[in-house]
Length: 289
View 1: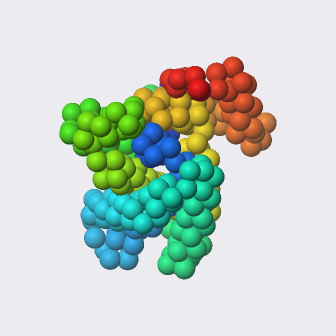
View 2 (view 1 turned 90 degrees about the vertical axis):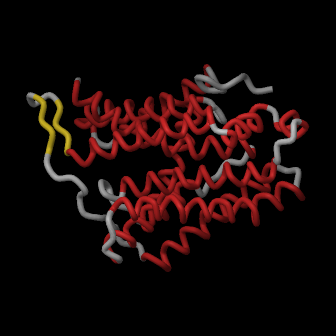
View 3 (view 1 turned 90 degrees about the horizontal axis):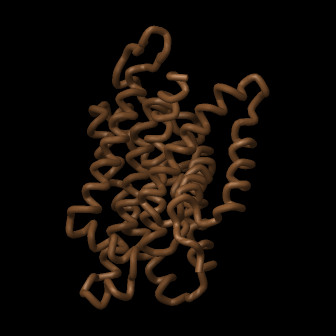
């Protein structure tokens, strides 16, 4: 049981960090960013390039992923999403744009890095063993702690900084925030950049554990959507809760259902469908309409 909980917390921390970026973008712009998984993969490849090919420390690679993805996210919002939202009143336009960006980033990753699995050397060696109840490599513990620390920093930023409070106001009531002098265009761009940066940071962290490859973008986006559906679309606390719930479900499934083959996600999806039939707005979301 202790091992299941430890694995669930480790998975939940990284999943919550992925979901935070996606739900921030959705809450500010009402945009489902289908390219979120590709941003995660791109961040992992940036860290790989800096650490393995340039020979720089891992922390430099992590900062490089954050900066590159923040710039990429800001550019995508300013030059692609903002004009489409301004000129089109149909939600399908932003969805098609997001899907197109996902395919475009897949092509860029293929041309720049190839389709092979890439990874970086372990940043910490050794394995933690607590009386054979919990066995976990130290690098996973470090990554889990860093992910939780980043979540805490993000929450503090959103609650106590002027930029964070402005973005929260936009998410709650865009018209009222605009009347109070909040620059919608500026903070939408900052929010998209921050969401992309979070995706890049997770990719940079996990390239040391699982590595990255071209095919990881789509499944990562699906998991991110699962998390915000569980917690409630556009609710930051819901994204965190959804991440840890999905991590715990995956940990339990991979342990308990391993004897029945690879059916963990079949059970997770079936459970989610039943849950959404009962509570379609998620755990912390408001009823639609």
